[in-house]
Image 1 (cartoon, one colour):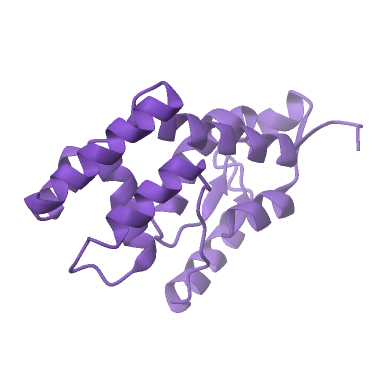
Image 2: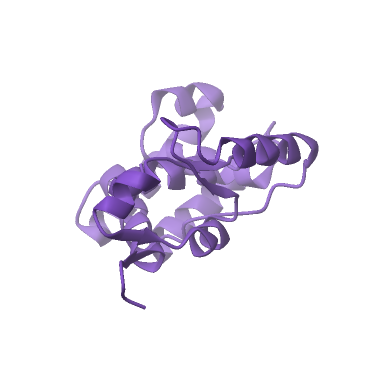
Length: 177
């Protein structure tokens, strides 16, 4: 939703962190324009490392370009890397946990899984050996002590901060440079 870009970028940032190929269909461009919001699609695409296609779904505007991008993505298996850089303690935790995860070949997916473990995600916990649990708990405690908030909240705050910064880069009010 181009008219509420920052709010919707949080989920997009999460998807990009997962390391899966995506295309952002930036819908409601007409509503954004009426509100005086000009989204720099090229900047947003560059910063997210994936195609961003402006569309107005109700009128069909931009859907042909979206279909072209889908075909290109389906044929291109070379996904561009993306990650939110977290503060040092979280990055240290990710590194320590990632090095202990086995059975997953993709480093982006091991990183994502490490983040989800730190966030106490039940599905993530079911994907790893229980022997890694003490390491995860140790890092959760370290993050909480250093950051003053639980690890999952601290990681979410970093994502929100990243989404906010992306929105600030990409949104320009009409008539302003």
